[in-house]
Length: 363
Ligand SMILES: Nc1ncnc2c1ncn2[C@@H]1O[C@H](COP(=O)(O)OP(=O)(O)O)[C@@H](O)[C@H]1O
Ligand SMILES: [Mg+2]
Image (cartoon, rainbow, N blue to C red):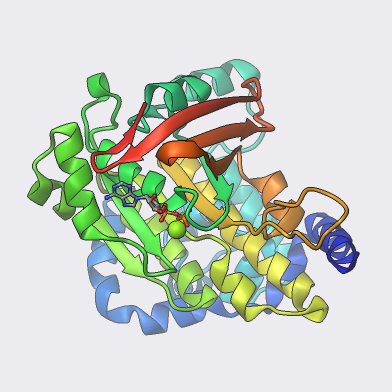
C-alpha cells in the first residue's frame, strides 16, 4: 500500500512540473559546470565556433554583449542551445527576468526555425532516423529494425536481466557500417554503477567481427558518482556529440543515483524535477544529433506488494512519459532473455526472445 501512495505522489509531482517548467530555476548546475570543467572546455569551445554558422548570441534582439557573455559562461554558446533551453535555466544563466528569457528563447527558436513544423517537414526529418542493430534478429524485429535515432529507448528489468549487456552490445554494434546494422559511429557511455567492462566489449567486438582494440577506442566512458555528475556529463555530452562521430549515448543506469540520493517522500518532487530535466537534455541530444539514446532502469520485484505491477520501474511514471521506447527485460530459462516492447508510439507491443552468450546478444 505504501508503495502505491508513493507512485501517486510522483504522478502529481510530474503534473505540476509539466505545467510550470519555469520552476526549474533553483538549480545552479550550468554555472558549476563551467567552473568544474574549465580545463577541458577550451577544446570544446573551439569546436563550437565552427558550428554551422548559426550566428552569434548577440544577433538575438535584446541580448547585448554582457548578457551574451553570461550565457556563454553558463554553457549556452550557440543560438540553438538557447532555443532548446528551459526558461529557468536562461533566467539564471543570463540573470534576466523570466519574461525576457521567454522572449529570448522564442527569438532563438525562430532563428533556428524551431516553432511549429508542418507534418511533411517532420516526415522528412524522420526519414533521417537510423536504426541500430542489437545483434539479435528477433530483438531487432520487435523494434522494427533496431533502436531508433532521435529517440530515447529505456530498458527496465531486474538485476541481472541483461540491461548492461545490451548497453555494451550497442556500444559495439554502433561502430558497424549501416549495411551491417550499425551507424558507423562511436559511443558515449555514462556508467553510474561501475558495471562497464572493457573485457566484455572485447568479447562482443570479436563476436561481430570488429577489431577489439579499435572498438575500445571508439567507446568513451565516464563514471558518474552522483546524480549531479550524471547531469553535468550529459550536458557536456551534448557539446561533445556536436562535431563528432558519436551516434550513441548510453546512461547505465539512469535512475540508480537519483534513487540513492533522494530517499523518502519529501524528496520525490525534487528528484522528479531533476530527472525530468535530465531526460529533456537526453531528448535534445537524441534529436539534435540524430543519435540513439539508450538508458537503463532497474526494477525490483516486490513480493510483499499486493497491488499493481510488481515490476514497476523505479522513477515511476516519469520515465513512462519520457522515454520514446520502453522495453521490459527479463531472464528466462537456459540463459535466454525476453524483451517486451511496452507502449511504443508507432510499433505494436510484442515480445522477443534472445540469448546473451560470450559473443554478445544472439538469437
Ligand atoms: N561473458 C558472458 N557470457 C555469457 N553471459 C554473460 C557474460 N557476461 C555476462 N553475462 C550474462 O549477463 C548477466 C548480467 O547482465 P547485466 O546486463 O549485467 O544485468 P543488468 O540488467 O543488471 O544490467 C549475467 O548474469 C550473465 O547471465
Ligand atoms: Mg546493469
